[in-house]
Each structure stands twice: as structure tokens, then as C-alpha cells.
Image 1 (cartoon, rainbow, N blue to C red):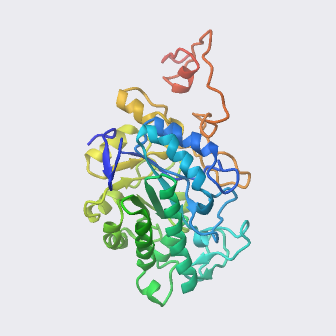
Image 2 (tube, helix red, strand yellow):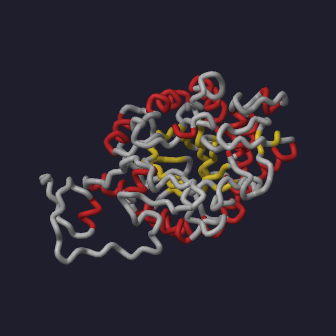
Image 3 (cartoon, rainbow, N blue to C red):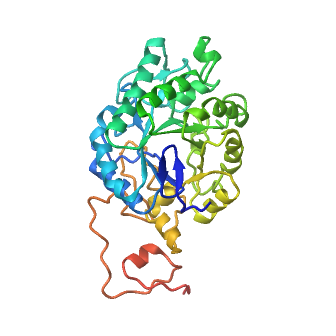
Length: 393
């Protein structure tokens, strides 16, 4: 299987095996999906992304993790606009849905954080409330309602977050779930209830799951071995599975910079794929090189590859791979794409300054009198008409 080959996801067919994953953008003008989101996502769909997952929207209004975090109940019109903009390109477009739980913030909601148990997040240190049955029921209803709105908006389905910054993951982990009721003795119960409720609304649409398969906390929590059991319990309820790592104990390991080896989840993903029973599995983890992505497919590590930062740097990545053209490289610096910051910077990229500005920045003009910069082939320079020399000096 090739990176640019189509792939079946549930009853939908994606035009390539490259996924553009959910990430914070600050592109919203409040808690909605804005026209800036639409332009941003449409550019990646036009460039060949097979599956595109929108910025994670809070499934319940108790969750407000950062100022411009989307709220699912307000995203319908924006989701519809994204679906319309991406439809001509055949991309499978999904709504990212989640709830941050104890890893959220009360700064904007002025409400007590939700959690499976009264275990504070090690970073924020806020003491959350332990959910009672009424709140759990409301959470399940929230995910179902958000999924219904996504389908009404014309999206292909949803992706649920049980990875980093996720209440669903917190219920799965002994680090944060110390309950003595049925949600503690069977830590997969909430996730299974949410998946069942979501499937009821989505029907034959796509239901994906982003799952932390290693919390990187050796004394407790989700380990790769424990994750196998979780996968076996939910694999028949989802259409694909994204293998991620990290928790409150290792937030820096979730989206590391260039100091961490690209493809760091390869071994983890390969083991999970064996337990997935044929459910398509997505490799995630600093995969920015198309050659590495192709090797992962060749080695049967995964069925699809998430290349989010690579497509922020170069929205045309998939099309260029298909045509044998060079791509603009992501350098894994995290300087402009890691935007959870009180200043609310828009997502962008040091090698692609137009990222995040698709709707308000005019096309880069062609230089009338090209110069000859001394650099290796670099797409940004060629876009403005420069001739590239490989000789330094």
C-alpha cells in the first residue's frame, strides 16, 4: 500500500492514507469554527489530505480548556462550511470531539473541573470534582448531541479524543480513576457508553478514536500492555484508531520538538495494530518525512499515517508526493504551531508563514527580478520566483 493510495474508512473512502489531525489553532473568533478554519482546512484538503479532523470541540459546556476552544453546540454552521469547502477534494472530514476533564481550566468557565476522581492535574493543580451519575449521563448525552450536529452539518463522522487532555482517558487510567463503583472496577465502561451513544447518532458514518496507549508513568496508569485490553474492548465499535501517547504525567511527550526522534510511536503502534483485529490503525508521532511514512506502511506498522505538522508546513504535501515533487520540510521546531498560550497566537509555521492566514493574506507575489539565494532547494524561495543554488558561499 502506498501513502497516496485510497483507503476505506468505515463506509467512506479517503483519497490518501495521510491524516491531518486535530490540533489547537486559535482560529475561532469565539468558541465557533470560523471562516479562518474553513480556509485553513480547505487548503489541506486541496493538497490531498485523506482524512481531516477538525480542532477538538468540547462535547459539554462544562469544558472550556482555552479561550478560543470550540464548543460543539456552537460549531454546526462552521462544520457545514468546512464540509462544503472540502467536499470537491474527496477528503473524509470529521469533527474532533472531546472533554479535557481535570486537564482543563476553570479560568474561563469559572466552574469546577470534571474528573473521575478527586485527583488534581500535576500541571494545573486544580482540585476537580468527582463526577456523579448525573454528570456522567450528561457527558454521554453531550457526545451524542455533538455527533448528531456533526452529521447534520454534512461531515462524514467524528473522532473522539481519549488521548492527551481527555476526560475519557482519565477514566481509563488508574492514575486518575480511583472510583469504587462500576466506572472504577471497569475503567472502559464510560468510553464504551460514549461510543455506543455516538454510534447511535452517526449510524453508517465514521467513528474514529484517538487513544493514549502509553501514559509514560511506569508506576501506574495506561501501559502498552494495558492498552491492548482497551483496544480489544472497543475495536469493533470504531472505524479507525489513532495510537498516541502521553498523559498529565508527560504532556511534553505528546507533541515533542526536534529533540525527540521522529516516528517515536512506531513500536507502540505496531503492537497495537496486532490487537486491533483488522480495524485500521493510524501512526502518530512526529512523522514529517514522507519516506518514513511510506516505510511505516510497508512494514505494516499502520494503515494510515498522521502528518499534521508536515501539512501545516506544506499543505500540498500529498499532491507533491503523488507527483514526485519535493516537499517543504517541517523542522519540528514547534515555534508557531504550538499555540496554547494566553496571548492566543494564531497557528502558523516558520517555513510557511501563510499557514493560518489563508483567508486574509494575498497570494505571495512572483519576483520580477529573481535573485539567487545560496541555499538548498527550498519551496518558500521558489514560490517567490527565486532561482536556487546548491552551492554555499
